[in-house]
Length: 424
Image (tube, rainbow, N blue to C red; front, side, top):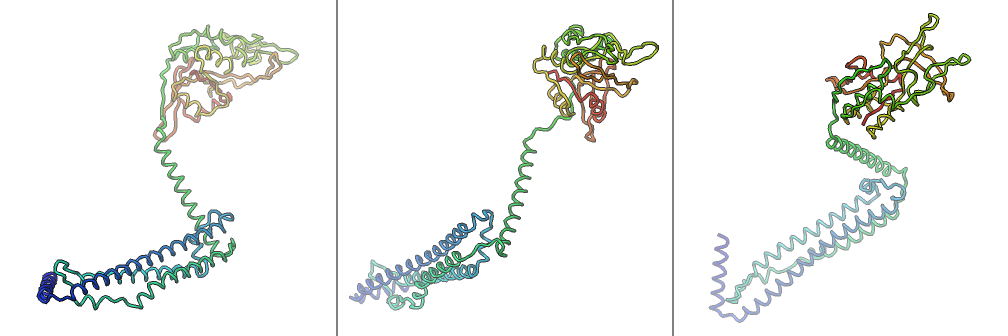
C-alpha cells in the first residue's frame, strides 16, 4: 500500500511540474544532489571514525600486552597476562570506557546512516521528468550535537590509550603482589591440566597403536630322551635343533661341548680339584652325581656332573649363529624368546631332588665352583589363564612333558642363577 501511494504521489507531482514547467525544477534537482552527496560524505566520515575508535582500542590492547610481556617475560615466562591485566589499577575501567566510547560512535554512525538513507529516499529524483520532491530540501540537515560527539569520540579514545600506556609503563612487576600470585596460580593450574590431558592423550594413542601382546605360545617340540645318565644338556640341544630340522646326535653335541680337565675328581691336600663347567663338560656324562667310598655316599665321590650355558651356547651357534645365552635373566626374557618362536634350553634345580648336598671344589686355574645336583630341559611354550597368571610347558629328556606355574618356574630357575640358552 505504501509503495502504491508513493508511486501515485510521485506521478502526480511529476505531472504537476511538467504542467507548470517550473524553471526552478533544475535548481531544486541540483540542490538535492548536492545535499545527498554531502550527507553521504558525512556518513562515510562517521563510519571511518568508528573504525578508528576500534583501531585505537585494539592498538591499546596490543601496547598493553607487549609492555607486560617486556616487563614480565624474563622473570616468569609462564605468567597469565589476561588475568594480570585485570589487576592493573584503572586499566579495566579505562578499557571499559574505551569500549563504551567505541559503541557510542558506532551507534551514532548507524543512526546518521539510517537518517541519510531516509533523506536519500525522500530526495529520489525521476530524472527523465526533472522531478524532485520539494520536502527533501527542507529535511536534509545534520544535528550539531551528533557531529560534535562523532568527531570528539576518537580524541577521547586516544586519551584513554595514552592513559593505559602510562599505567602499564608505571606498573611494577613484583612476584609477591596479589595479582601476580593469582596469575601464577591460574597459569600453574592450566599447565597442570594441559599436561595431564596431553599425557592421557599420549597414553590413549599408544594404547591404540600398540599391537596386542601374545597370550600364549607352543612350539610343540617332541621329547627326545637322553641316552646317557648325565647327557640332559646334549639331549635338550638336540631337541632344540630338531625344531629347525637340524639333526644332530647327542654324541656329536657332547663332542662340540668339549671336555674339561681333569675328568675324575681329585683330592689334593684336602681340597677337591675338578673341571670347569664354563669351559667344557665336567666329569663323565655316563657317570653319577654321587659316589660311594668306604661305605660313605657323597657328592665328593661323584663321577660326573654337567656343563654351564657358555659351552652350550657355543655349540648352538655352530648350527644356529644367532643363538644367545641368558644370565641372571627375567621371566619376560623367556616369554620374549617363545613369542619369537625360539626354543629355550633351561637350567634349573627340581624340587623333587632328594640329594641337597653342595660341594665346593677348585679348577686347575684356582676358580672355586659350587657343585650340586641340577637338570636341563627345553622350555617349549606358555599359556595365559583367565585370571592373568601364566603356565609354562616343558619337553624334558628325562621326565617327558609337564607344566609349571610361573612362580614355580621362576623359583627353580633362580637356583641356577636364571641362566638359559635361546636357540635362534
